Image 1 (tube, one colour):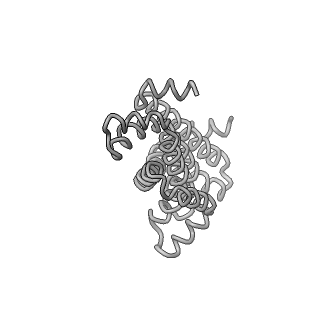
Image 2: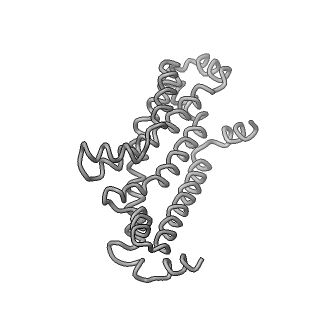
Image 3: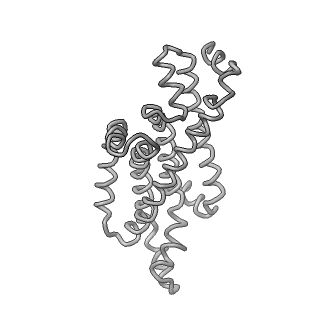
Length: 222
């Protein structure tokens, strides 16, 4: 605990371009950008595959293959091909975030009660209307779960940005280990954990606001 007190109690760690607020903003920026790109790719694909039933096996295979990719190895490979910059950080983070979003979106849409779909079609709704007005709202808890899992993984893994000379909270961890400044290392790791907990809490709030009460009760009732 004294190491944490030393780190967080040092005013120098809260000021300047290398201070905690700047590093925290850099880390959050990497995570938000990677999660946004992953959602743009995975949510439409998951909705389409789940709704049509086509390509479900391909979705599962792709998700499992992406999970097997080594984050650090992919980071180094992209850095060698594209040079130092934000791209080598974003590529592995997006690859890490896509599988949980894709799989949860696809399974959430596929898992909608068939009787509910029959009723929707019976009311005259067309395919895309059933997807947007029935399947997606009912699947929203699972879609948000996939986004939450992806966000937490991205927050924990974005520390790799420090390996290619970029900022973020990983700088405290990498620099601290290099100089044996253990209060700095522990402080950086603590900040990553706190940010992950904050993200989880934010998604809980979003789920409470975005998911209808009827769907929430149905999900909790199991």
